[in-house]
Amino acid sequence: MDMKNRIAKRAAQEFKDGMVVNLGFGVPVLAGNYIPEGVKVILQSENGILNFGANAKKGEDNPFICGAGGPPLTTLPGCSIFDLATSFLIIRGGHVDMTILGALEVDQEGNIANWAIPYGNGKYGPGVGGAMDLLVGAKKVVATMTHTAKDGSSKILKKCALPLSAAKAVNLIITELAVMEVTDKGLVLREIAQGTTLEEVIKKTDAELIVREDLKVSDIL
Picture (cartoon, rainbow, N blue to C red):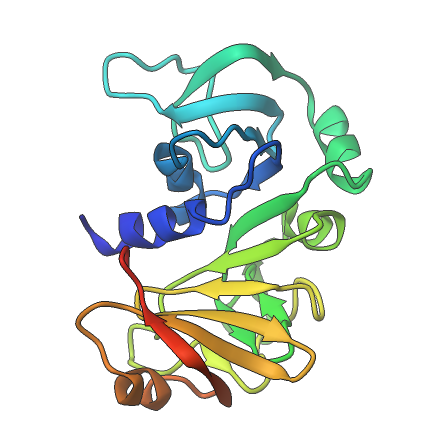
């Protein structure tokens, strides 16, 4: 299983029976492929679909049924498709129990930057989209991301450097190396991936980590 799917599968372990869960584009939407057995969740996508299932296989997809970012989805009985205004009424109305989103940076205070990529002269792109609504509208926020950037620098920071999508919004961070929980006391390291070490995780994390005494080795990452 590749890195993105491992992160998505671990994120799916946060699903609880009866939850309404928003899945963002990229890694988050893959979590719909790994709903734990016996757990029933209602998946929502900001582009206007409610109660979908796993990603559709090639040749079995419907071009009119897709998630955020365009991946084809399967539908479940009772699936609803609606306009953006209705979708954001659900999000802003506090009806989403959890959202799983991607991120460019997250810091130890739970601040998140997931939209602004600098491209010169003080300009950023591509645009914040629905992230800010989800980050303040959902009851729990899970950030899924790679632990480091392409140049090897940490994306888990003491303080975000990029423009924020929301302040103190993130509850849980899942990377290919670790699972970290944002708490009032700081960033708590809950799990590390198989094949890595505590020393490696600390070295690749700019943020200050509080290591749990019962630190686990993940059976998924």
